[in-house]
Image (cartoon, rainbow, N blue to C red):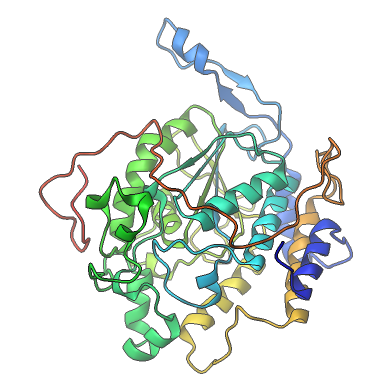
Length: 421
C-alpha cells in the first residue's frame, strides 16, 4: 500500500463525507441543470433491429434510469478528460507516453465519478484510449457510479496527439526557448504540428509493446488536423452508430483528442480552435438531436468557461474557467517559477471542498453507495491510490466496429504518417 500525503487524506475524507456547508452560488446554473435530469430516454433493442421485417427504425424501449434530456432526445454523450498524470504534474509534454495517474489524479477521477453519479446519468458503454491515465480514470469513474459492469472499449485512435520531438520536455522551458506564440500554435492550432520525433527518441511509441502490431501507423508528430483524421474514423464507425442506436456514451480521453471530437461536433472554425482548452476531470455532457448535432444548453447560452460550447460542464462554468486560467499560467507565464500543480495542503483542501460541494448540488439520490464508501452489498470501496500498480495494455484492442484500414499512398498535409482512406 502506498502511503497518502496529508492533503490527500483530507481530500479523501471529503470524498467519503462530502459536506453541504460550502457555498455553491457560483454554480447555480449547474444546480438547475441537475434538477432536470429526471426523465426517461429510449434505447433501441438490438433484437428488434434484427427482426424488423419492414426495414423501419425499431421502437425504442423505455430506460430504467435517468437521462440528460427530460424526454427531448435519446441521444446523449459525455466527454471527460483524464485525471492528473505524473507528467501533467511535472508540466511536461506527454503525447503517447504512458504516464500513470498521480494520487491527486486518482482523486480527480473519483470526484468526476461522483459528479456523474449525482447527476443521475448512467452509461451503456465507455470508449477510451490505450493509455493508462485514461483507462484508470474510466475505471475509477465507473466505480464511483456503480457501473463497473458496462463495456469499456480501448482504441489507439482515441490516444492523445503525438507531440513529436517535444515529448518529455518541460512546457515552460520550451516557451522560454521558442516563445509563447509558437508554443501556442504547436499546442492549440489546427494545422501546425510540432517538429517530428526522431526514430531514436527516448519515448518513441515504437518501443512500447502495445503498438507492435501497428508500427506503420505510429505518427512522428501530429497537429489537431492529424488527430481529427484518426478520431473521425472512430466517431463515424463506432461512436455515431451507437448514439443512433440510443446508447448513452462516455468518452474518456485526452485534451487534444477530445478537442478534435468537440471541434467537429460543435462546428468550431479552424481559426478559432486555437482558443479552446479543456480541463482535467470535469464531465462535459451533451444532448444531441437526431442528426447528432448539439442541442442548446438549458439556459440557451454558450458556456461561459470557453465561449464555444453547448455542452454542460457538470462542475459549473466558473470552476472550469478558474482551472483553465491556472493551466494557462502554468504553461505560458514565465514570470511564475512555482509549479502551480504542486499547491500547498491548505489550497489543495480548499480545491477539493469546492469540487465536493459541486457534487452535493444535486442533493441526495438513492444509490448503491453509502456515504462512507461502502456499497449496498456491504463491500467497501478501495481507497488505495497507488499510481504505479496498473499494468499497461499490451496490444491494441480494436473495437468490433473497426476493421484494419488500408492506407493510401499520400500523406495528410502536416501529418507525419500515411493518409487514411
